[in-house]
Amino acid sequence: MKKFISFIVASVLAISILNTPGVLRADNEMTAEQQVNAINVGWNLGNTLDSYGTWITDVTPQSVETAWGNPVTTRQMIAAVRERGFNTIRIPVTWAQFTDADGNVDEAWMARVHEVVDWALDEDLYVILNVHHDTGEHGSDKVCWVIADTGTFDQVKNRFEGLWTSIAEEFKDYDNRLMFEGYNEMLDMNNSWNAPTAGNGAYDAVNSFAQLFVDTVRATGGNNSTRNLIVNTYVASVDQNVLNNFVLPDDTVEDHLICEVHAYAPYQFCSAEGDPSYTAFDDNCRNVIDSLMTTVAAFSDELGVPVIIGEFGVEDQNNDSDRVSYTEYYVRRAAAEGIRCIWWDNGLTGNTGYQIFDRNALTWNEGIASALIDNAPAVSGSGVSDPTDQTGETEASEQTEPAEPAEQTEASQAEETAETAVSEQTIDEASSSEGEGSDLQNIDKNQENHTIILIVGAVVLAAAYTGLFLLGRKRGRKQ
Image (tube, rainbow, N blue to C red; front, side):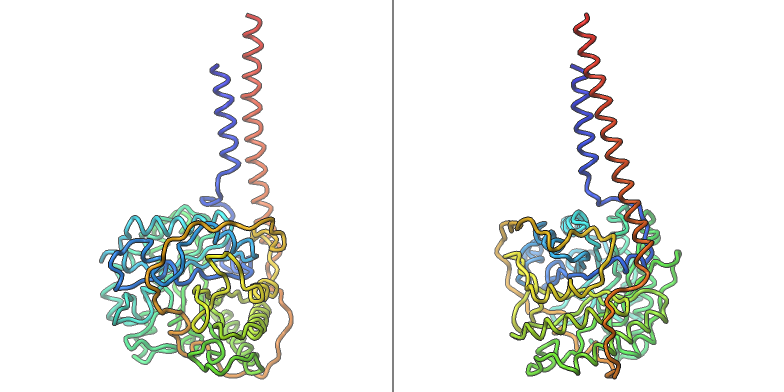
């Protein structure tokens, strides 16, 4: 009987080894360049964990998550992102209503963020976790406290350090697929979009927050010692003055920093707020995109680190064919420069709406989704299944009734953040990026070897205990 119990225990142990989620895997450290090259295209879980509202009377994880009209996030939603062919998800999070003055995070909120991050990693996605509307416009009903102002930096730096210590400690043992983004779109005291109007102190503050973010995360140790960290320019702008005044933080390790910008360009086309009559994709769009990608690529070369476009998109103005054409050109042009893009999806339709994934029905705007996937660079090592091999539909879990929607959208708040001088150059049709080959193949090989070792070890262990069990039965019969 004892050997029979041993056999059962060994079998259970073997099965548990083979089915352990890859969430806490700490192998295969990747440089920033390797990680960015491993991304094909990403999707933002917008207007969800980044929601907020001073008007919310019952501040709970669920009431805040649904406050802007989106349903509670489910594992099925995250799985649908991977199954459609995306290999990266950006998870914006607003922490303000769940932290104290020292940056300590409410346990229930941290647990909810943790749960969604785990789902994404279990689906083998690359994950970007950030501090979102703690930045942005401030005043009125806003909860922003991270402002591009040196006086504000001095006042809140301990809270900012405490918040990132809490986040970093929570995920310090998570593997390289998880990236941290220090802050979203930081504005000056005048709430100035595109570039600050309150003086160069705004740039100094952004650079100070960036340095404090990197120092704080690195100090927590564990896998955070080499985790790839993302820092944004002032309001994530590509304005040339903004780029000129950005200072890459010092780091204790080499090649583990990424810079991020956001570019809804040309803004007049991308948002009804820019020009509601401008709904046709044309040569002006192409020229602005060409100039944008040239600017971002030059900025990346100057910094010596990869630069990603963490947000872009086009509002729904009943012009889906033009949105598709825009997306195809934008992603293809970015890929030609080695730049990776992440679509902003706020879950809204119509004006102010960037939705391409219906989170209730678990269905996609197939035209735009295909434009994103088909024009993104082909990558290896993503762990994403073939998007054409979809064996079935996932069922949506029951949704709770959302609270009163807030009229919020990332791009609708921005002025022409992404406008750059029109370039006369024509698009380079090449859609593959350089430097993706051998390093990612080695990573894949290491992961395969790791899996084989686990399988062989589990089989040997189970076989050994089975042998002992059978031997025990044989000896028992002889007695």
